[in-house]
Image 1 (cartoon, rainbow, N blue to C red):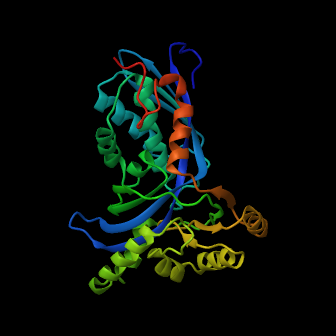
Image 2: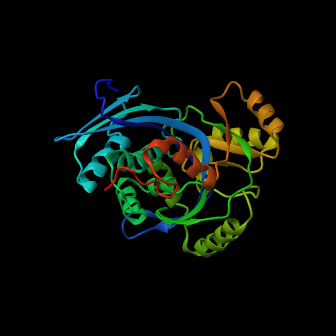
Image 3: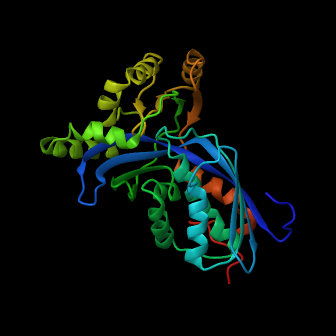
Length: 316
């Protein structure tokens, strides 16, 4: 990021990953997407986004990204924000990726949501939550969740969100094997096994899981059966986490990341040590309160009060 722009407003924010504590696929919708029931949960693993905005007569967007991600969602989010808010200026971003890509962790969606939350504040515009959600939905099905954080039920394409009681503070281990899983392919595998008769049972089972207090109860991921059939090494990783004491242990999204939650930090540390040859991370669940507090701290010099979504103190 350029050091020349002395009038730039700057912030460093964290874009958290998510896991799915429960994921049911009911069938294909008329719009071509699948009807989902899922429980999202933010976790501590995060990308870092340095973002700066300099008012100007022309708009430009620059990003430093060591991975050179094609069609980066953060850039798309910045462009959409400038166009929607009808503001002009220079946006500079540096994205430091720590969330593995293509593993069902929502890293790209979280990066996009981070831009939607931070850039209006830096640009001196106030955006109401419904408008922000509409912008997020244009960028992707998981993006709206990262405007909320914590634990939430997602229905439809996952964009209709309902906050749930927060899970107990839990620690865990996340394993991201070097085995890519194509989301489109996973849906094709699963579609061959979807039946109308099973939908009602899935709905009632999902409701029970959503009502459960905390994340200690075993959830379900409909993708596991078909993905594990084609990639048995993922099933083996889940069994290793379960043998180490994880409850629950689940694949997140359509894969390939597997996570396990533990009753104590000591058990999580032992599990992590036993998986030292894998690409494994120590994680913790991040509640909605912690998520919002994290954002208020990151933007404190640019906001006047702790309201959600964060609102710019520079706005007229």
